[in-house]
Length: 105
Image 1 (cartoon, one colour):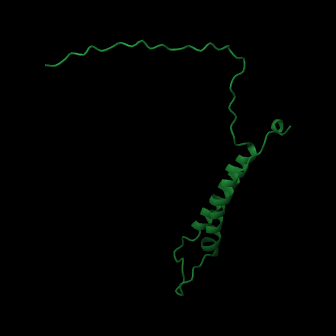
Image 2: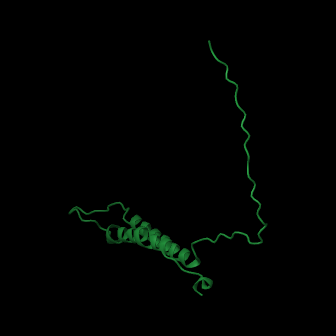
Image 3: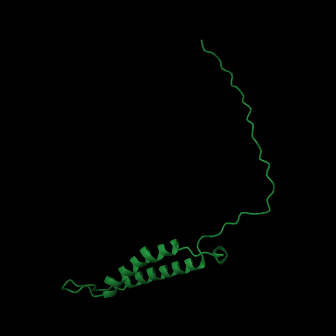
């Protein structure tokens, strides 16, 4: 024999918080300042220059018969600029904190 179980209804009591209407509103400030964005733009410029220099190595004959590459900028300078841009300048622009003049006082 099966026993029929009636569902029990529980009364859920929600407590309403009585709060005063505050005149202060929450202001969210963007953490990156103008200096951070300028440094990031500089980093993007360095990265773009690295890719442009790397593209100069695309020629009809990029290497001579000796096995040496013709273009110094595409082989040596471009990877250094790309590494500098991606690993140094852009992270520095993100991590560097420039306090507001109001916060300094």
